Image 1 (tube, helix red, strand yellow):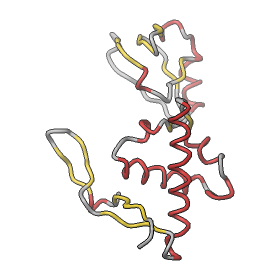
Image 2: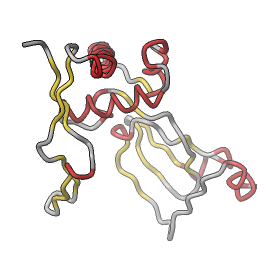
Image 3: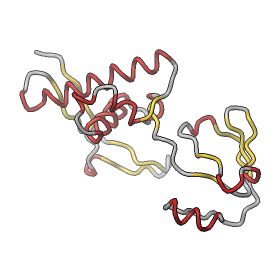
Image 4: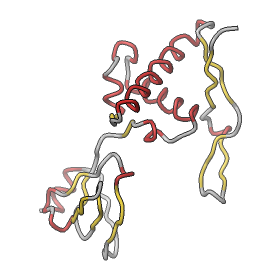
Length: 167
């Protein structure tokens, strides 16, 4: 018998909503990945590499973006979708969200307006950020004590539309 990984299936049929937790969780279906079967070798190699990279990042106590992870071994991953999918598999296999593996999404978006919060102990007052705003951090676990007297939140997806509104 050879070494293998037991990877939980992330398919819709293997998910269930638990109302008490207000969360979707995975059921018990798993797929085995090993180096024995030719069809599984690449995905198994990707998973082993991602687990190695995540171990290194956690050991160093740093955070990296999904894009950073991809660029550590472009020849192996080929496309970012490959590393992203295997990263999600690794998180499911370990039983934690991706950010607990110290891999975060890139900072995207800005906050502007009547909002205050603490980021890693520092008070952030978005009313003083001007039209350039405050970048939404990728590690939201360092955010606390959010307060606002705003009546609504307006989410603007496109930079060009945001710039027109901000001016």
